[in-house]
Length: 332
Image (cartoon, rainbow, N blue to C red; front, side, top):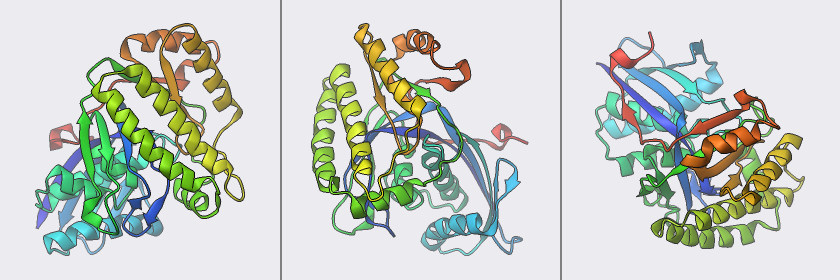
């Protein structure tokens, strides 16, 4: 057996955040979430299954990863091998066009691409909804990167694994864009998984977060259906700030913000006061994302250049769902 799958997956940025698991093994979330897939950040992954391999190997950006990192990938691939009733070992080659572990959703694109490539290599032919339940087992947010545009990740019910999956909500082709202010692209000191669990376990604000997130999801889906960008932006900004508020209530308190994060938030508010609709959101990292109209994105970028360097400002259009690539499109 020597089968190959090559897939590109884009990152997504949650507008209604996922923060907290009710089942750590199955990656089942405490609340449903909703995201926007971005074109500017993506991962390309090639999976080669071969009977000549005696163990799995994992290369990230041409660097062979250590045993610990490879073991995580092996555990993920085993889900697919079990479904396909095979034991064939794999060579994984992945190129991350996203700074890893910097709060720019690198794990979302990484595991969505890996899931898509393994699905092809193993000959499973899973539909996208089912594939999203597999991707979720690598990284919760990866379930949303299976699709493009605006995507909901349903929390499911009880501890039933296949009840929690992603659903495309809207293709977001109504003049939506996002600008990322890269405050710090270095790997963060506290991982999302650890920060998330610490918040769930110790923050007295957490139960209120779960309730608010549910209400925010209902409200933003109405705004999307109405194509009401202002309402969508206001809900997005408020939801992100509430998530970070729950972290400040953790013991010890958690903050992923840096001084320039605060500067960026204030600058975006100043731009909004000028009559340009734009709204901030932040994940578990210092980088600030600006939800805006695509037609305003260059104007906003120009205004941000008074405070930030050109290389810190990354504009993005709406991204697509996972894409199968040919071997001719794979880097040699």
